[in-house]
Image (cartoon, rainbow, N blue to C red; front, side, top):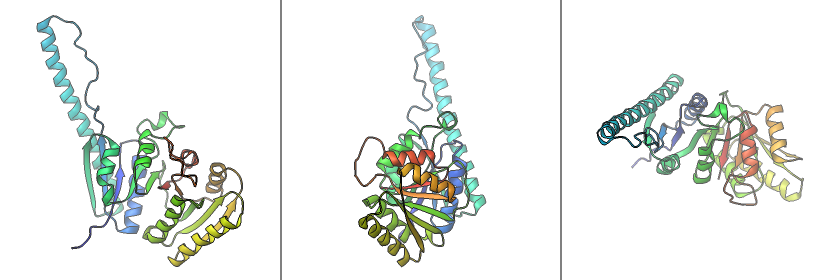
Amino acid sequence: MTQQPQKIVALVDGSVYSASLCDHAAWIALRTGAPVELIHVLGRREGADKKDLSGAIALGARTALLEQLAELDAQRAKLVSHRGRAILEDARAILDKAGVADVTTRLRHGDIVEAVAEVENDARVIMIGKRGEAADFAKGHLGSNLERIVRASHKPVFVASRAFRPISKVLVAYDGGASAMKAVDHIARSPLFQGLAVHVVTVGSATPDVAKGLENAKAMLKAAGIAAETSILTGQPETALGKLVDEAQFDMLVMGAYGHSRIRSLIIGSTTTAMIRSCKVPVVLMR
């Protein structure tokens, strides 16, 4: 029995990040040959009016008004569903135009984390925009769904930037922790990174352990046919890495979702959060 290829799962919400997300999904699909599943999740409350507008009215009028409100709720739910399908059709059109042949769409009701949990066994990567539909009003904040998905998902999470550009240079933030080592292993095994310029960097002191870790990472990538450079930067990780991404014009950042300390707080690691917030390029997070 032939095993199905693992899917690229792209969560589209109709925000300003959705087009970029689809362009990035197409780039991954065309380099890896993986199929794409586009998912739009309708929250449980969408389409339902949360307020009781009937008030204390005479019984006959109240009954008639309740019927009208129920009808309005049904119409609202139908409109929200139509909008969700339109978002998925627009997303599919971007992938079709890019030449991606295998694309499926799914409209789902409920919680976005539950939706991801249902499909992630068959996924090679989960893709989401940096911010949601309120992106223009929340430039200093990450989307709440992004943080929840990164905490819950066991697959790499690709956080799309606002604009797509072809990816040729990849920066890998390496701190010697389990998730950083997993990131290097993932890069070595994935056809996505073949032919790309990869730079593995550690922020901190140049200790023998750090140097050995970088050498091991470089050797693992070399064995996979990827010629990687390594370097050690001084300073605070989020500042030093952000500066390097900008100055050396990297197109993508790959990093562990949590640092070497393995602290599992209620939010994703502080360096990770700062990097996603400040980086204008896509960030791939590894658990």
